[in-house]
Image (cartoon, one colour):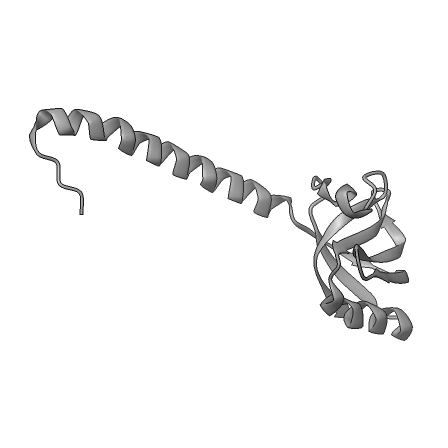
Length: 123
């Protein structure tokens, strides 16, 4: 509980409360922008690769706006799903942000790869 006694304390608290409110609004807008950027794309896997010390990626035979690779930093738990889809000839719905170029740090080139945020197998 915050107690404000006297006009002097009130005068110091209002700018702090305003700063907290502005920071909360900016954080909310950033989170909303990040959520809006996520997209689902139905990938027809043509290759799956796992590099234990760096990344996992799936190559799609049907590129989305020139992007044919979707990659995650060393995500072993995703390997069975992608391998099963690839060997069974099934599609994979991939969740990604077309504006996220952070994957280059682990080998996902900006020219043709985006960070994989999630995936599900489709018939």
